Image 1 (cartoon, rainbow, N blue to C red):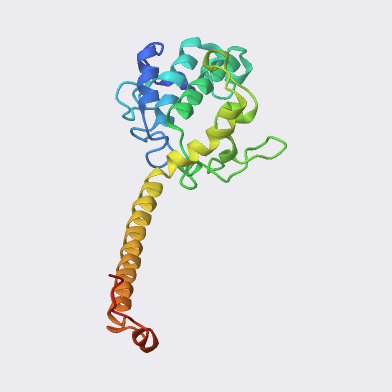
Image 2 (cartoon, rainbow, N blue to C red; image 1 turned 180 degrees about the vertical axis):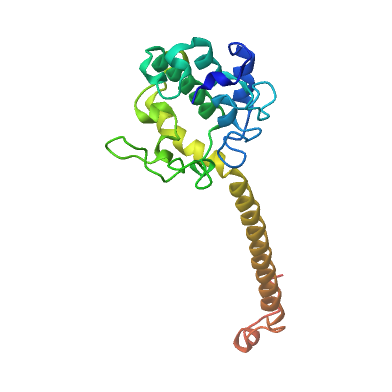
Length: 228
């Protein structure tokens, strides 16, 4: 099958790439060419890079360059034979990397079902050896051992690097943390109130049972005589 059978609208622009990066959903439904508002489908080139609405009659982003290069690059079966293929897909991967860093999705965002055969989260990538699951690559490139020079960030000190994973986990569960803090505060206030009420009641009871008169032997030894 040739990818040149669809309409070519020109090479992708930086504005189209930025729009694609702004999409918050990695996948909006089934992982296919008809997905709307899907980052994956828009980057792949089956959705309009200005609206994210599926339009398989036109070709955008990733697909557009295959058509522009023509020759073997425009043929699905033989495009990997063109040296430009590696450069092109490395750049497409860097766009995916930018999306990962911007939106920081959890692994569950990658579809576990309804993807084409072999593309679900827990499916193994074939024919590669050793075997890896698709979901194992749904993470930033630095966690896989490589980076892009134009995306490199200033080096962090060891303390910051130590804190980043914990801060990221806290960001993902901050709502639960706030809720737990509020509930904990309410429970603490109630318990404190009960303890104070019991303490005051106990003090009141203790003062009520004090004798009105002193012990008899003290009373008998009491003297009202003045020194004057």
